[in-house]
Length: 444
Ligand code: AMP
Ligand code: GLY
View 1 (cartoon, rainbow, N blue to C red):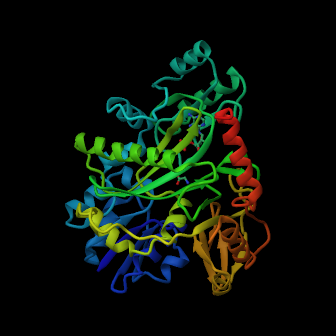
View 2 (spheres, rainbow, N blue to C red):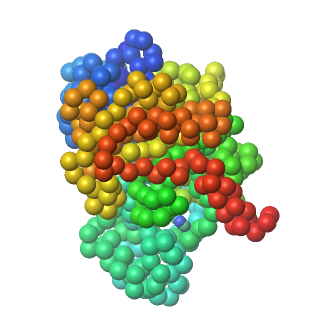
């Protein structure tokens, strides 16, 4: 069975490992940078721009691949799944039209409103800086400012965190339009308060199967300080919930994702592949922050490390619209993932940073290493790029134990000028989340 895998981050390394659990899967990888973890398991590797649809399709055809798994959003946004399907390759990822649920935050809000799906947030899209600034001046600045299109998770600015007055808010609006950040205007959204969580599901367009709830940590620094990043780490509990997330709310969130999938179907945009709901639990219940047309990074690792069923089976069943029937099986364990990044990541990343990793030793601690933006210099020696370098995942009966395993694994990653958010998965941070949630609910 020949699988094309597009993307070269830690999420894709985890996907590659999950796919090659099936002994007769042969992997053909395309990514911008050569991922050493994927290079070790790939039959062929093409280093190319993942959005160069012609090059990707040609590589897939030349190697006669049958199935395709696309990790990141950028190739979905330019219609890679559609082109693969036109070439007779079964894409286990959404079409360009279905992926609009991620690529246009405006479309996402409008779909929820049209289909009366709960969890929507007051949100108005503006096509000009003048109109957006006038609205801020008139209605106030207690809002979130969100570029409509893709920004790699780094485009949102929130009152209190990123700006505190009209001048600051207006300046960001000007920047978004002047620099065409996200490319399609800006949304002004009601600011929500609460705790965030991620719900990732598998779907074939009809059946929607949830995986464990995960909490990501977008802010760069310990204690949730500093700028937003792609995600510094994440954790999940053995029971599939989170310390502040009751079962009832999790199920409500899953039902929102299910309704989104069904709504896309009725709009003629049948959705196939993993789908990601980012929620905030507020005093008024779970609210949709964003929907992604893919696994999250790092959240993919939390889920794929627990998946017992080979991902090749799940992917094929999604693409063939036969996900119903035997449900995929998962280990009932907790997970903690932390990213190692070069110092200055998120603002001004240091260059020429080197790390040494002894993967076998990492594994001896009950942990796993996933490579991201690193180049292999020699066995066990890697040069970091400017984004997230490697992720270490620990598993355990409890988050506490999973965190111990993750930290023991991280101790086998040696290097100067590297940075890790060690507070992720600690009892102190988990307690803080529970207390914050209690305060938001006002003792409810
Ligand atoms: P996004 O790129 O949409 O995931 O947003 C990035 C981060 O901005 C989220 O993880 C939230 O922490 C924050 N955010 C987004 N939308 C809102 C909102 N309406 N209210 C408060 N915070 C938000
Ligand atoms: N971790 C957030 C994302 O993948 O969008």
